[in-house]
Length: 280
Image 1: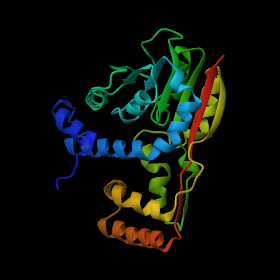
Image 2: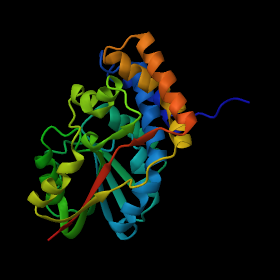
Image 3: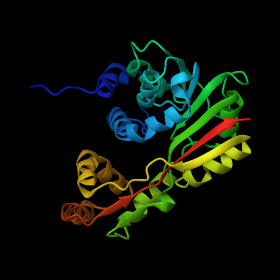
Image 4: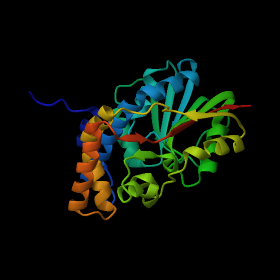
């Protein structure tokens, strides 16, 4: 029986010829990125969806999704509301991917826009949502100010799933590999590995009454971590190779890591923060 393609693989096949194929975005790594977004959306749905309900998504009429990426999270928003979702992303390639991913979804409009300068009037939206935006925003306080500006008075602003690699807990430890996955990889790509702890500051300074918390208070089991690693193995190998580890070093680490998971002794926890703000 032929394998069933995910919507993101079909998206990739339809639009890859239109994408920027610069050295930083080859067709191969674009496909891998879209696949990871698909898996990430599925894994994080159980912790994102309760936040959407707390933020009032089902009753919101006008929703803005800032930094929509390839549309995987946007699709959740559209399915959970009777309102209309406007989704924006600075990367034109991602807007094209999202347009294909969301084909047939009736309550969404897509456009290219910069989170630092949103092309909307003040107080336009009932709910403004951003998933993993602040880790990659060049000027995060400006982005928070813009999210607050376009929310109506009494409206809500939600930032979800912002990691803080400074709080990452991992044991048994590996002094070489742990450095790669405790923020160095994010910094090398231009991101802020400590964005999660800064959400309260960004939101309060944007004039929002703010609540912060952990999206993922639960620590995954070793069986869950092992299943996740089997799916994401290629990503781990590429990240370690990019960090300068040779094949023998990667294989040695993998043997130790997988053995600890099968033994049931491994513990992995990365705090993912949310901020929920109300415009006064």
